[in-house]
Amino acid sequence: MLTLHNIRKSFGDHDVLRGVDLDIAAGEICALLGPNGAGKTTLVSVATGLSPLDGGTITVAGVDALRDRAARASIGVAPQTLGVYPTLTVKQNLDFFGRLAAQPRRKRRTRIDELADRLDLADLLTTRAGLLSGGQQRRVHTAMAMMGQPAVLFLDEPTVGADVDSRTQILDAVRDVAEDGCAICYTTHYLPEIAELGATVAVLSGGRIRARGTIDELRADAHLAPDADLDELYRMLIKGEALDHVS
Image (cartoon, rainbow, N blue to C red; front, side, top):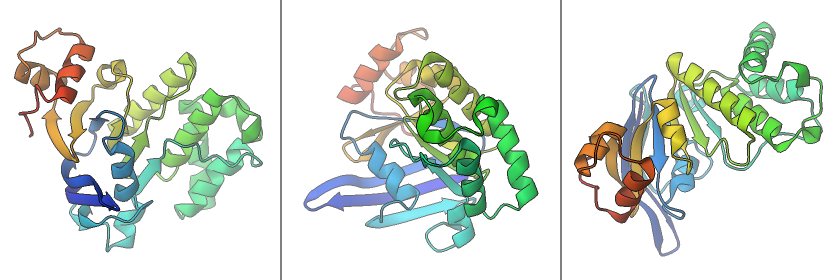
């Protein structure tokens, strides 16, 4: 579904992305891991058009998203920074993003109801977003990215700062959207989420994808037991001690 090939991005003399290659299939949740400063947010920004890239190609279902407007519009994103409009109600925020996706009125209404149910927002639809708690705003922020039913969805640390209930609801919604066939790139520093989502893993280090596969594959490459702690695996991946599996 999504193919990133040889993605490059520099800031001045600093090469942040040095040829990133990443494929994510329809219905797959790919957890993008890497230390702070590895370029995860930069990759999300250039892949979704929020920032220009210096080189490389982005295709959705084989169509060049840099040249084709429809392919580009099929990519959704929830950046790490909250993007809710505080003076609008929850329903107005969602409706606005439905309009951006060119959804007809009836479709917008149906989609708002679906997402309100998935993310427990039904009782908050008439509340101004600026009056919501941090966790509630995270749920609205995620729903806004899902509003247009994108074929590809980037979620940059969507549960950061969220309470336990909001985190659970967001993860449930992410799984539901993947089951609908969406290809999802999900950045996180909270490792248990990878297992909860049943996600594959891509490790970004040194400006490139250094490891790619399932948790079981990466554990095997690191010569760890099948039930080895995820924190131990992550430390080895980041240190480069298990960066020999790219599929």
